[in-house]
Image (cartoon, rainbow, N blue to C red; front, side, top):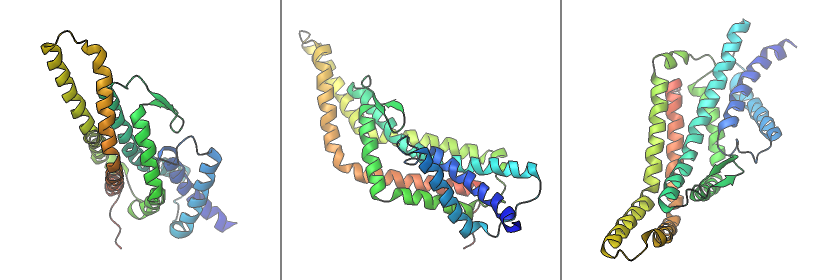
Length: 264
């Protein structure tokens, strides 16, 4: 009973980090995954992490200190999941840029995975990216990153100083800015193609005023956008692999900000 009373608080701290990670992380946080499964797999992985990392951890006495440690573990899990989820949102942001330029911005569809209205092309690319992510065992790497987070940010580390000196806020702002840059780079071919189409339609309207540009412009932009999208589809695998690489690098950068590199 004494061993159980000493190990159960450590297990709860690990469970808090894992549960917070599953709340916002891609794949695991989708509505298609039942809540019972999320709680069950979080508890199972927390037990494995405790057997690997948590058997030698000692919890200091005091309820107030333990409550602060719970909030700290929840914050770490939320930050790790947010960085991973932010890189997945890059795909839908890029799809929004494409839809606005093509003219499909008004034709949003309901996404059952996120429970929100998403752009048509963004939803298509999101499903494509999710299949590639699962095929390359990306969900295993996500779980592995949480396991390695205890080497970088152990339970006795101090992350309040990183929040006070602004290094954590600077990293989050820089990552958020880079996500928009990556989204614009992904949508740049279609944005440029539709922009050149607008320029051509503008010259046509000036040289031949008898043409109704508002009637022929919309289908022409849709045809050009879908044609460029068809040409870009074979390169999605390479683009998404690069995006996932950026995601794991951002998660490692977050661990470097919150903690320090392990000795081994």
